[in-house]
Figure 1 (spheres, rainbow, N blue to C red):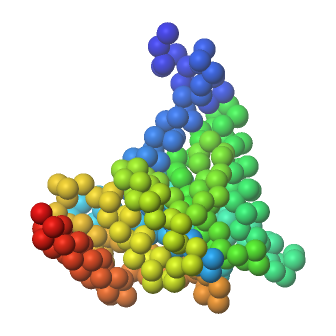
Figure 2: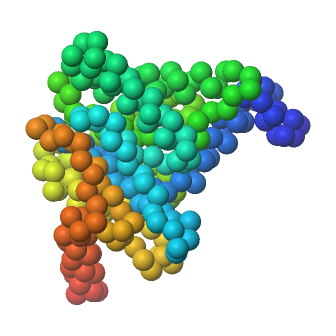
Length: 253
């Protein structure tokens, strides 16, 4: 049986019990540029690698502010991400207008998951081809969530999505236990180190202040995007740390 007999519509099941259009949407997330998220007891951050379509084009925005206490990083179709971000902003404004308090992060993530799931069961629709890393801080603490085109969502201590994200996940799995008590600067350094793992050895550019963005939020810290000249000191520290590691390994050899 051929796959193309069962992927013409989102409502068509294959004999193996699979919905191929959802799998295609998940693949779009895997093809997107890498995003890394981490959280401590007091802060949550996302770090993204931006891409440009050519040397003549600017880098695409990968981090969006949703509210004062929340933001997202994306991997996949940017156009779909803008739609979901607009929906999240509207929900935040509506909740603040009615209840005069910011919406809890987990509650908004659940609404996004429900919105994504509706597109997996309606004829004529397609799943959103984007994965979100949602960070926020509310009265229950710092949060880091991932949402998927399938409608699933997950709460994480640290996670990476996008192209070559498995290398970053492996790095985070070895170090995530120390993140709980880490300072904001330490979280950013660990996140940049994890993101650098997703860059192939053939890429000579690496992480720069132009192709890297950091989003931060936390206790007494409104959501903010760090990039450009403000990010350069962290990148310099990352390069210095790699140089020291290389020197140590050479001496041991």
